[in-house]
Image 1 (cartoon, one colour):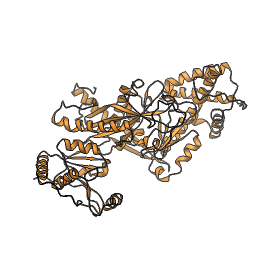
Image 2 (cartoon, one colour):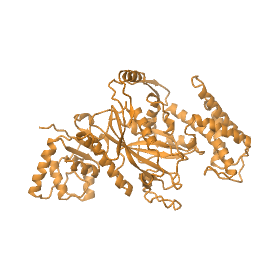
Image 3 (tube, helix red, strand yellow):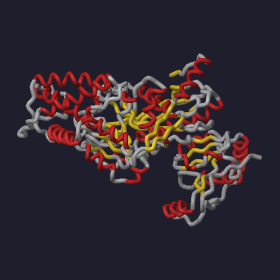
Image 4 (cartoon, one colour):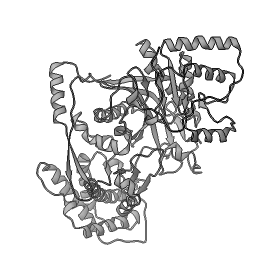
Length: 582
C-alpha cells in the first residue's frame, strides 16, 4: 500500500467532487485498468493553475490526475462564474465538463488516497516542499527568489567574480537597491557621473549633426535658446578625469570627486545639464572642446562597457523588487524625480525592495520599434548545476518608442499609426521571423549561466525538482544581449499566434526532459539543449555573514566566500574534471 500525501491543510478545503453524469460500464472498467497501472508505476499527478498542455501531456504518458482542492472562497468564485449549484468541487480540467472529463474525474476519485508523484503548480508556495517524499517531483525550487526577484539578481551578480572572471557590467545594466543607504549613495554618484558623460556625448553628437552626419536621432537643432556657461563642460571633463584617476589607484582609500563636490555645486551642474540636454539650450563649442570630449569618451569607454547604451538623457527604470508583469515600473531621467518615486511606498522601502536600473536608451530597433526577447531555460539540478537552453524564443514589440515590452502591458495599448507595417499587430515575432537579425544565442546562454552560478549556493537544491524560467533580454545596436530579469512561472497563456504555438511546445519539451529522459537517457528533448553541467560538488559550502549595524538608514551586509574558494581549490586538486560548457 502506498503512502498518502495530501496538500498542506488549509481552512475550508473542499474534498468532494461535483455530481457526474452516468458513464458506460465498459469505459469505467477501462478507466480502472488505467488507474491500477498508473498507481503501480507511481504515475499520479496534480496540477495547480491553468496548464492544459501539461495535463494532456501527462495523461498521454499514462499518468492519472489527483485533483487539486481549493478553498471555499475560490469555489464560490468559480461557481458564480459558471453557475454551479454544488457547493463542493475540485478541478481536474481546463475545459467544459463532458463525458471524457467526467471519466477523468472518476479516475481522480480512485487515486484520491494515493501519493502524488508529480506536482506542477504556478507558484512554489502552492505545496509545502518540506513535507515531500524524496521520490515526489515538483516544478519549483525553494529560495529561487535569489534569482527571480530584481533585488536578488541585482545582489548576486555582484558576486560573479567568485565564480568567473567575467564582468557583470558587460551583460547586466547597472542596478542599485535604493532603500540601502550605501547603494543609494552609489546610485547618486553613478547618476551624476552619467550626466557628465551624457553631456560630453551631447556636444560630440551635436557637432556631428551640424556637420551633416547625424549619428544620433536624439540630437536635434534647437534654435532660439542660448546657454553661455561653457564651464559646465569643463566640469564634466574634470569629473571624468578624477574618476579615471581613482580607478588607477583603486587599491588606495581615496574619495571620488563626486563625493567631494558640494551638493549645491552638483545641483547647479545638474540644472545646467537638464537645460542643455533635456531643454535643448544651445552652447557655443569649439573644435578644441569637441576633440577633448571625444578623447575623454574613448577613455571612459574602456572602463565603462555600458557607455554605448547609456544615451544622453540619463534615463533610469525604477522597479519594485518583487513584482512581475511590469507592475509598478516607471522611468525617470531626473535625479530628484527618481528619489521622490521611492519615497512613496514605505513598505517597499522598509523591505528594501526598490531597485533602480540603467535604462537602455539605444537598443537595437526593428523598423524603428523597440522590442525585447523572451528566452526560456530549464534548471534540472543545482548540484551539479544543470541548465537546458530552449532553442526558440519570441520577441515582444513595443507599441510606443519608449515603453515596456511586457505583453501584460502591450496587449492593452494601441499601436502608433506611424509604426512600420512589418511589425505585427499582436506585437510578437517568432525566432524564425527574427533569424536574419538574431545571432546572439551563445552570449545569451553565457549570461544566464553567470546568473545561475551566482545563485546556486543560495537556492535549495532538491533532487526530483526542476524549474522552467523565462529570461528577458534586450539587444544593443551591436546585437549584444543585455539581461534584464529572470522570471519564475513564465506565462504560458496562448495570447497571440506566436505564443499559442511556442508556449505549448516548451511545455511538452519540458516533460520530455524531466520525465522521458528518466526512462530513456537518449530520449528526444525537443528544442531543449543541454548547455551546462557542472561537476558535482561533494564538499560542503559555508557562507559567513557579518552584519554591521549602521545608521538608521539600513544595515551593511558583507558576505565572505573564503571557505567556498578553499573547497573549490581542494575539489579541483583532487579531481581533474572541470566545469564544462557543452
